[in-house]
Structures are given as C-alpha cells and as structure tokens.
Image 1 (spheres, rainbow, N blue to C red):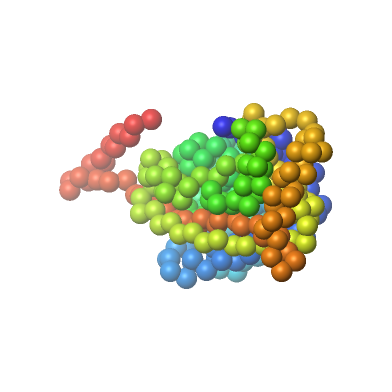
Image 2: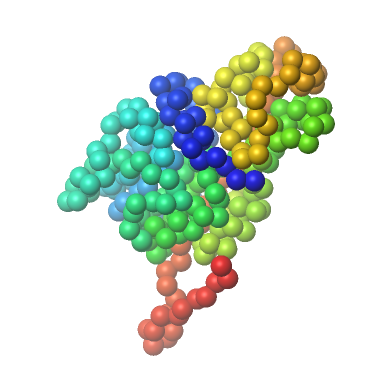
Length: 286
C-alpha cells in the first residue's frame, strides 16, 4: 500500500514550528546512528542529509567532516525554514565548499547530479518514501565508493497500538506498516549497493495517556498516511474499545510504545574493470 505524499508533506509542514522540540526520538536515534562512524572510514567532499527536517544533525555532521559541504534536503519547506543554521540556497554552492545548503525536494526525485555526493545520511526518513525508488535514487546520486548511512523504522514499531486497534476486527489498516530489516537489506542489494550491514534495536517510550502518544505522532508527521486508510471519524464505541485494549498494557502508571529502530549502511561500489582496464558492464533485472 502506497503513501499519500501530499498528506505526508502537509503533516510535516504543519508541525514544523514544534518539530524540533518534540522530535526526541529522531534526536536519540540520530545520536546512535552517528556512533556508527567510529567503525567506518570515509572522507566525503559533499554530504547529503536526506530528510534533514529542521537540521539538528547538521552540527554533528559538520563536526565530523568539517571540510565537507553539507546539503540539507527535505520535501517540507517549512522544516527547512525552521533550520537553526539557516542553510544557503543550493545554487550558491559553486566555489564555496565549506558552506551548508538547502534543497526542498522529494527523495525519490532529487535535483542533484549523478555521482555527486560522497556520503548520504538519512535518519528516520525512509518510512515516508517509496523504499525501492528512493534507494535507486540514492545509488544514482552517490559517488563510486560513496557511503549510504541510514536509520528507519521496523515492523514492531507501535506494535501495542496496532494490537489495540486489532481488537476492532474491522480489517482496516489503522497503523502504518514498516519494512522488515531483512527486506531493507534485500532492497539495497537489488538497487546495486555492496556490503550492506544491518542492525536493529527496540526503543520503548512511555506515556501518561494515549492523547500524549497521538500528539507526538502528529507533531512528528507520523499519523497514518497510507492510501486506503480509514476515512472520517471513528465512532465513540470503537474508540473506547481500542482505548481499553491499550489500557490493559499500562505498567506502573504508564503506557508503553515500542519503536523498532533499524540501522544500516552500504557502499556504492566502484566500477569493475577487466585486467586490461576495460569497464565491466553489469546488467541487473529491473
């Protein structure tokens, strides 16, 4: 089932003014993702922060790679405008390799030259895109030997909420589905990447009530944006049924919400050559 991209964009634009203060999960996951650089060697000339949001990863990426130009790309222009370091428009990048730049665009159709980025970093952005299309575009934009480092959400995300809605037995998709770690790895290989490395962990956040959970999901743009989702308001009795099912999970006065975090990185391999220097043309199925 596909996403309604206009609805996703609208959600993020509407929550832009509050996003930086409430995006605690993205901040925490971003810090954990940064630790993966301890085991990798890369010195990119240009870095793309794909799905940059309000840009809170920018300072950390600039600290790790102070000589690199940093491009922040997001489809929500309001999030880019809320960026605290106010990146310059992309067209000012020529001749200024030590500055940060902003691009408002979709990950599936990036206005960037092929083989133009040495590192593409993406923190919790992939769930709001078409995975296969985005990975092909990331592969196109990466330089040979370039690195793609990312985090995303796995299928156990919001499993408590999904189970509570399951009590309605209405066959509707009330909670967005997320891609399994192994399927993400397969998609990377299919897109042409080499040596994909995947890892996962569960993070549990607790809430005083369901209203607080839904508020965080709305502010983070994380409400259900699937085509074919239930439309209109839910009846009072059905809402009560779901709420009571979730309340049975309350522990020590708090409601749990699980987020399965998937971490990964992969490389764009350099073109293969024969011993006499001729390029090897690889043909992959579409």
